[in-house]
Image (tube, rainbow, N blue to C red):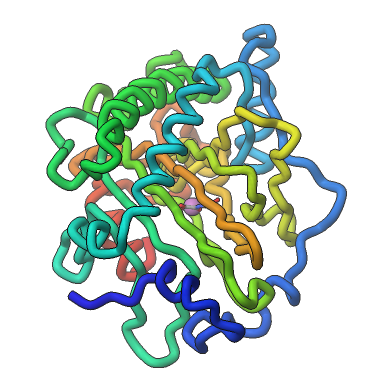
Length: 333
Ligand code: OGA
Ligand code: NI
């Protein structure tokens, strides 16, 4: 399969962006600037338990997003994760192509670049690598990068660390909804909960003011746990404006997105955050998103404990497989 990679295009040193990357006028960053002066919530998990629960409730309902610090993940592990991911993307092109995915034929895992389906469609300035890291029964090591050689070990360790953070967050979110701390995890699949790693690679872009790295979207996961290199770019939609996530002062923080499944489970109390990412003229941006998702057969709907006559269900109940199918095909949920 012949796919033109964004990284290859960027290396050609274009002065002008090819038309398929030029966003409609209203979407262009220069016409939809972020609001200055607002800062996103930062929650230290080292604070007193009841304070953390309250801060999580506020951030999840008002923003659908927060940064966590004092999460217990060593900075050295995050550095290694970033190092092996970067090394993969600096391999010669033909080495990377050996891992090419093929979403049109149902093969989502591997090295990918979105392609246009028609002439009007716009694409994002990004290449990525996607693979499942948990539970063990769903992991396909064949598709994980074999180069650099430590890629697998580092990503296995990072996956274990993300499972610990997931458990902690699901407990805090359960408590903040007034539920027993084990409730959310059991609804999101218990030990079958899936972790999916997506490495986002945004090469320097000749006309960043006309393009987007990722277009506005909500994640269909329950949660997304993201770290990035030190190049900013992520923006959140809050009360009618874009807000930039400025995390330069918060090195080592993990970004937590509330995803669609959490919005549904909480019956809308927690918001699946609309977000996008911008690209940069000089610098390459990379981010590592871990999607925390239910297994496909899990049935997700508003938690019965949260419903009564005053609070009827605002969302329908369906399997995660059905939710995915509708989201991919833009069918109303
Ligand atoms: C995503 C995403 C944003 C970023 O991968 O779903 O929203 O900061 N990424 O790279
Ligand atoms: Ni996202």
